[in-house]
Length: 126
Image (cartoon, rainbow, N blue to C red; front, side, top):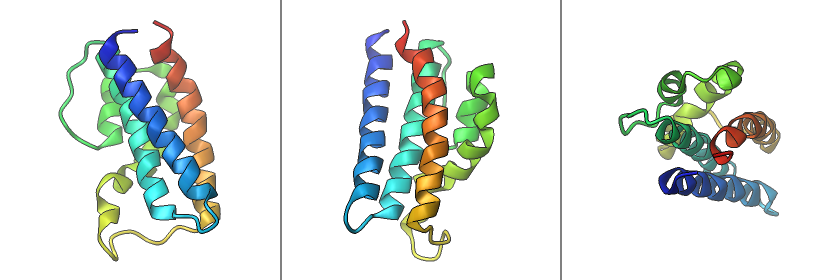
């Protein structure tokens, strides 16, 4: 795995762990956890793009990154990526997104974990 790809993967892993910690806290921090789930997915997609030597714009739009990847194994995850995209920026202001319960955040995290388990081996194998 090339060094830049490895850096993207490590940063993605940090975001994953951050989301886990934030949701497992005695007073879970749902909104920041959702931000880190989005970041985890974004950084894994960017790792794959770097590995494939595909240029990309500095955007947080996961659907855009997903299309650029053109990877059949992750195609079934387009819905979760669409759902995550707003958490990159839009959640930062009151009233921009509906509130998510801990249960809803945990369910979303489960879907992100499935996506992560499909994508991660594509970038760490080389």
